[in-house]
Length: 110
Length: 127
Image 1 (cartoon, each protein chain N blue to C red):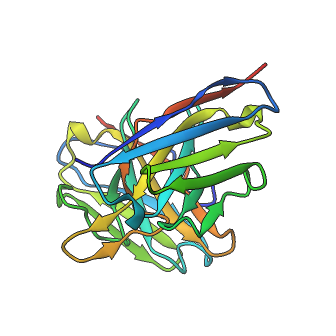
Image 2 (tube, chains in turn purple, green):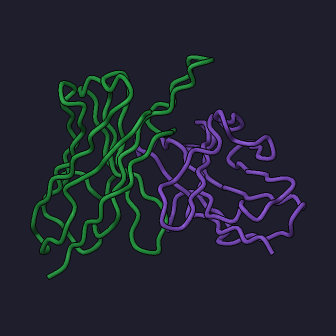
């Protein structure tokens, strides 16, 4: 069971907006920034969002992140078929003195 | 081009040991935190360990503390993960990853934001 809680699956049709949630606690999301990773089958993860809402160079602005209290979310607008992947949130946990990941959300583009 | 290449994975019996290596190229290795993340077959990501640029600071997940040791040789641009007392639940693809750095803002990702990942090396613990 993961320290950060994500829905196991999400879906949307091309062009739609999809939001993936990530719920934590005061010791992780409540005290530290959240990062998001995208992973395609058989590939290494890719940093999609850092410091809650910052996009690394090359990440389309269709992707956005937010954080409020002990929860965070990743929004994907203008959904495209190539967005179909697994998405993970992550944050430092002050109590565990380590990084915690969410269990991952499998995004399906219908 | 910034690259990471893991090696050292394989099949090992429960209770055995294995040392993973991760060779870096294309960036100033000693400036960055390096991290190990693993992924069991069909499962999610699990952070394993992180080490500071100098090697003086290390962190471990509770699941591996006391059994795994992370180290680095900055003269060889390589980070290592020594894994002892291996268990079946350690079976996973092990990735090494580099701390994110934004050249425009000077932001360092620290221990939890990683932008360059290796291709992963499979570790199977089974009798």
